[in-house]
Image 1 (cartoon, rainbow over the protein chains, first blue to last red):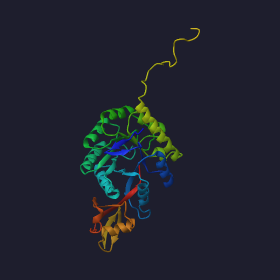
Image 2: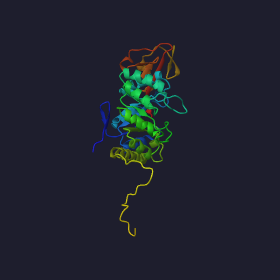
Image 3: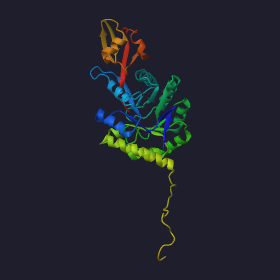
Image 4: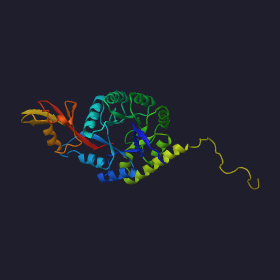
Length: 258
Length: 68
């Protein structure tokens, strides 16, 4: 049974998008990406350094392996910097897709949604397909959709925290009020967190640390791939209602000696 | 001798160099995946060989790195 989803007309089979940072090695990163089944790999844009050179090899191996490369604007604190970084990314990677991050401070890495909305609007007008990393705020999400973002990417918890879904209610509110895909970006820590995201009805998960920082990243990538399928299937199967008291599953009549 | 900033570092050039030459020095001959900014504007690849840097210019040469 096919269960695909689309961003701006582009169809995906996998509901996972993976970051490429912090793996023990390049080889483990590539094996983990493969094990996860992802079709999208995110990258950052940084200054070429004379001593270490550029990481063109990363670009080449991701491209040759057939991944859609999604550049991010990580590290930008203002709309102006994020717009410039996105424009550099478009030039470097020949894509008009961008994961838009505008961060408020180093300690929380939470999005500055005021600057995010400004940058999203400028980039959309400039022809970008903006995938914005945002707070779990349904109103900001709605504004991002109104600007023309082809997907909205709220956090489950702060970047790299691995705390799992902190506000499931808001994610469901967003799912019920948005027409564009809802991609949970950041904060999942393990397979069950990913399953919960999909059980809530979200369309996809973008993650990095949960896999890269696991003791066995490739195995965790596989676990999360299964969790995504399990959670999504559970959502489509429509779970039973919650009840406050017990409800016996075996017949209550015909008991012996009663 | 002119002074320009390349990726935040001061560089002294004997004569005004073309952006294409600076990219070749900083990033190597294979510039696939590289982008160039000049004074906070993105310069499209076809223009690298036509634009020469001037005193005080700020050049950014960027490429993809592992990221989340």
